[in-house]
Image (cartoon, rainbow, N blue to C red; front, side):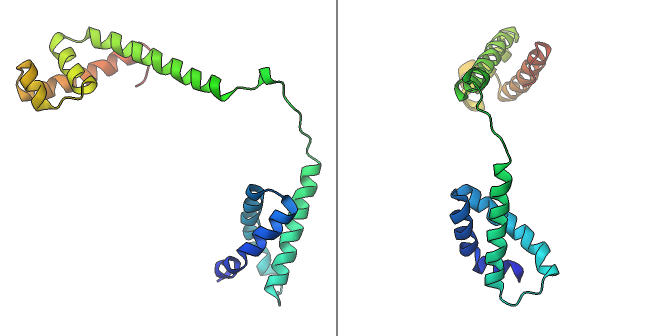
Length: 164
């Protein structure tokens, strides 16, 4: 029942929060905080006019939030101390490149049948039947070579420091 009542006045709460906080995301977050606060306070207070009481609770919550922000100090950090999105992206690309290079080396270490079947299945995205036609290897052996090749690739990559 409290949730239904709160839903009825959710726009009021958001509007009051937006008026004081002047940021839609902060107002939405404050609305959630107010609902949590409401659950605790509704038990303690005798409420005759819910809308007015909720408005006062919302206003007080926002004012307290603004007061607490005044006491927080922020410092601008120099750009050289900040990690940019480009650097993070570049690190991810470099890691992926290293993993691919390791995988290529491990594929080269597979026995010739496993190597051919793994390349056809994973890199060229061929199905078992197509691989059977291309290589002349029986369907069951194709399946076995793929399973064994994948296991051997995993072992090789783990031995060389990558858990893929």
